[in-house]
Length: 248
Length: 291
Image (cartoon, rainbow over all chains, first blue to last red; front, side):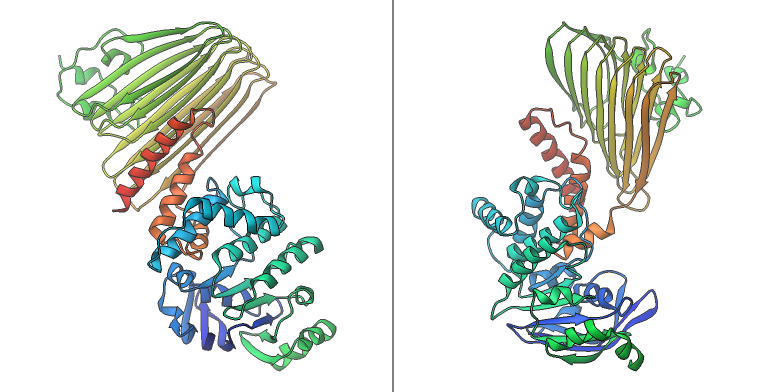
């Protein structure tokens, strides 16, 4: 489903990702763990097409379509979703208006009619309810004045409503207290499906207590240097990244 | 003698960003007696008095784009009166307007100006707070397209204590467009307990766009709360990427961001259908700017 091969990414002329390869089959959830500065955020931005993240070599495909040839909005329409580590504030644009624009833009690019407004509202309300998001908050400007936990819940809401084929969750656990973490993790778990893949990027093992990955990869110095089952996360939590960073 | 010689040059501080003399050129106009140049160009001053306890809504449409459209107004709000004034400027040549507003005690004046610019569009407002505990909202938005000039100029003079003033002006300019905001707030010695906030934010949409801002705050009283801010810059690239990552095409994301940016200036107290109409006009301008 999601395949990255020999990816190199430079930011401001400095190479951050140095030959990264990864395959996530449909229906699986993989975790990338790595210390600060290992290239976790660079990887997620490069895959979603942010300006300034220059892919100098390698390939990334989603269900066979070449992501790197697409604009960020085309990648979204192709089914890619990035949950941001730091969701951006959009003053003056309500969460409802934002999601409506996003859903209908994606539908349009797939040749579908816009979703009827009542259906859209019902969908948003139902998903907000499971994330314990107050309905009133849907009318507020997106992320403006939201707490860290609220922002991450809104990322989870967007994931639930947009229903992408493949989602990258960048440090979804940062800024969350334990209650919010459980709610967000439950929503991510609910998003698991046989035809959907998830990539969870995190520094800490804590998140993986709640989102059980099928595979864990260790990212250090811009490459995946070890892969294993869920037990690898526990080992990292116990022994730290030192062993891997030194070997990299 | 040509009247052009009596028009202000750009050496005149109040007109340094709007070259009226050049814009009027050799056109023939009769200059009347008046305190300010637009009052002298206007055929007369329309005066309205809002009685105590009365609440009125005035909507002015400056949509004459054949020639100079100079208008002069005076509004007197008696104690406890309330006036909401909305000005929509679409006329493309020389729309010029000046309004003098005098507020009695507890009077409430809410103004929103939506200016699309013209060869030279200038909308002036001069508010005198003469009674205690008055409330002033003086918001506005300008959209200066290619070759368009939009100038929002205001003074708010606090002469009595306890007034609350809120001013939020935002604007966008495209290549060759020029936006001007000149806003002066004066707090006289007698105007203790004044609470005044003024903010201007300009958005330069393309290289070659121009925005001039001259915010001024003059405080002669010592027990007041006053703040002002002024910024000009480009669109938030992070917000743009965030929206695109959700599938919204770049041009649509830009329009949505600009619309949201400008819509914040529309007072929430305006009737909803009027708010919708104003948003619709902004949206139409943005759609045209995209094509």
